[in-house]
Image (cartoon, rainbow, N blue to C red):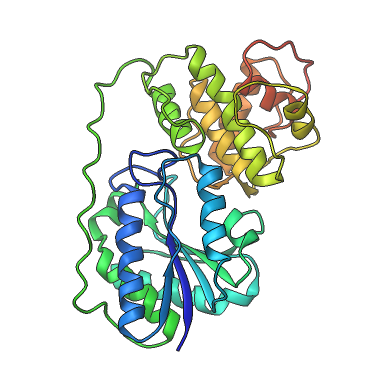
Length: 336
């Protein structure tokens, strides 16, 4: 019999760095799927450890706590359950390398068939924190897109969980007699105000790095400080910069940023930060992913921002572009 770690990504809904929100709420639904996967595997006689972190904390703290729990056990596979966002549709599974590619392909196929949604296949990244830092082989399942009406209409946590578990052990199973715990009631949203793009950015910033940030659509002092926190958080996740996420731009933040760029085709948390920062400046990046993939629509938003700020217009987010988008009171040379 196998031994597995399974966890749901992000903090609980409405607490700290909770997940993406659209027609579905990631931090609610991924926990239902996680519970179903664990129940199904245990019913089949396997040993399973739940490594979910349910504390109210930042994204960086959440990831570190999950990895610490995972690395406390020697297992056959670490399974990270997420829901996607950013304007797409379907299921995809992320691997660190080819070691987990076969099972990842089976999971993607099973979930696609069970839910009747697009199979986006297997993808690779060595920048995803959990995949990079767990000791055992690991994969990350993006079960569907929370902002896709099509995916939401076809969403079924039991079918999804059983499909994942079946792929893991190689035979059809069901989480018999398992009843997921009812999801906690999400807090009622406040009445929308201010700039809607900035308001969305504030929501994403709160989930990513700035718990408690008000989502009022108004670019005040706290939002300006949040911009720096978002950038600091992303550099910690991608580059292990070890920065205090305090919203203060000092010499260590300056040194961490120098030499780093993100451009079309790359997938990392700095892309997520760029998407959030553009929103906080009132620019629409046309979706957000965590970690983000730099696509053509994001590039168009970067180019427009660079043009408006008098920077070199190349669609690449380098030192000056990141400084301009995250730190309001700067005088910069005209080079991206």
